[in-house]
Image (tube, rainbow, N blue to C red):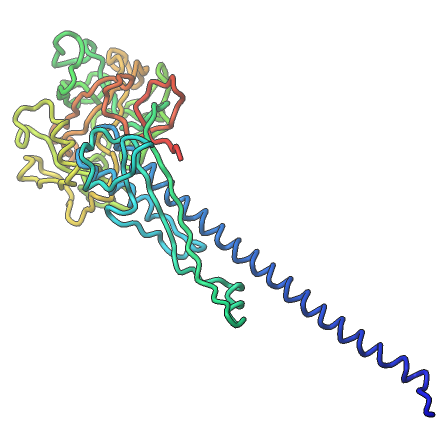
Length: 416
């Protein structure tokens, strides 16, 4: 009988154990790769979700700012939301987020009611909430897609979406234009009946230079406290939202030391060196002058209707103002609330002694007309809309949200 040698008896188990370990290692590696792949793919979805949420939040906040009765058919609100949402990018900042009219921006009067597109809203004035939705579909997986090689397994491409709901609440403050309004009774001329302004009243810019000035009831002020005409220009073309507190001092560089180009950008009228990319226009450039608005008062309601249709500046012939610039190609649908703003009211008696005055309170004003070329060719005008603390004041589209006791205008706040 043939005997197996000890070497051959020990060799077979060793080969069997080595094969088992290899299988286990292979299975462990496959499992590890699967979990790593799943983590990477889920991480990618999380990043895309965050990007889409940023877009939805931006859209909702931008659209909600006009839920104050300042719009009639919600077109401005939707346009503002789509513009803001589209500025965000998704899939690692590679693709602009797409939003469609009557699809991604929806409205409702109550959170318990369904959201509807603007074209089916029966009573726009009752709308209190706006919802924006964003999504990205057909996102190919990086690693999980490898499971498709397994018979019977079919991994579909991923889709991610986000939503945000916003409304309006009382603000702490709001943005302003760099002018001062003379307190009624302290202006040089003309006198104001009853020593106070009335809502809808037109007031004109001052002539002359400080400290003597001339006729008119508002002038230029650098809100940063300086006497710099450059500051006034920058505050006109930009957004000055860090408002000085009541009682603080603002400076005046004099009469129309800002050039006409800076003021006119808010009407969508641009002359070198200004352009829309650096100075956003309002939703409308329509000008109110004695030529275009014979009543010379109470233009606000017509302004509201003009901005819902993004009415352009009617041209120098229609306005009766000879401007230096062009409004051709201006896209008012990509505009913002630039002509309805706050302005500090001051005791103009202080300005007779120098270039400084203390803020008494803030007024809501409407910029009515562009400035003639040259800056000294005649006054421009504001329409008085009330004090900023008035609950009915229409300056309700900018600012920082406050608590329930805040007295400022209504501003957008996220609720969902």
